[in-house]
Image 1 (tube, rainbow over the protein chains, first blue to last red):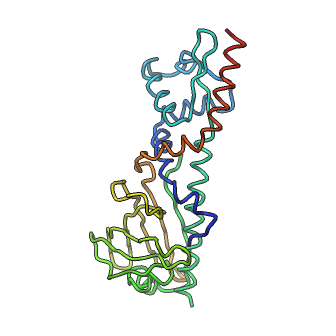
Image 2 (tube, each protein chain N blue to C red):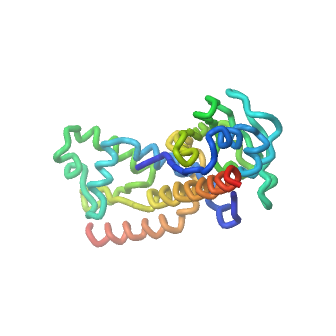
Amino acid sequence: MLRKSHSRIIARPRVHARVFAALGDATRLSLVAKLCGGPPRSISQLTRGSKLTRQAITKHLRVLERAKIVHNVRSGRESLFALDPEPMDELKKYLDRVSAHWDQTLARLKAFVEE
Amino acid sequence: MDNRIEKRIELAAPVSRVWRALTDYREFGEWFRVKLDAPFVPSQISRGRITYPGYEHVKWEVVVQKMEPERLFSFTWHPYSVDPQIDYSKETPTLVEFRLEKTAKGTLLLLTESGFDKIPSERFLEAFRKNDGGWTEQMKNIESYVAQKP
């Protein structure tokens, strides 16, 4: 069930928890969607079109920032937020590995009950 | 983002056979590759050792949740808790559920593992260290970006 090549990943799965938690919210997901593939945006730009206050959006951005999903970029006097896809890619890779592990385990179960 | 894993697999064996392979601790150990100390009992800890070559040092420890005959077998565990240096017991475990359904060919097995978002993040620092090179690079980019646009 475990292979050597997995050892690096399986030793550190819980680093992804904060990323999961940060993404487990509709507002934050919509902020990620807004930043995805686009240039860094200011809090005002990100608040536009939302029912939430600037303050609430800022709070959500801080959560994303702590999870390293977004980072702050200063442009002159303006504070902008940019997306960093790496934590999400890592997360997806981790789930893919857990998933592949279950595929192998279930294949063994199948062989076991069908023999 | 989806934080659960779902699998469906059709097994050409009766539900009763699959149920036994899942819940008889010796049979479970055969295909899961773990040597268990004792039978599964709901709300009790099941302990054992991984039997996969190279991972015999890894302890197996799960808490059996539900055993509804020929329908549902579930347990909670700490996925991939293979590092002996780390105490996983304080972390919120994920829930693994095996559901069985009778089909024309035999049995449909539905597996879910959920709760990945509940895992605490003390070791997030480790990721920061791993990413250190990348972040240093990024800080430089930001610095030069800011320098260009004072």
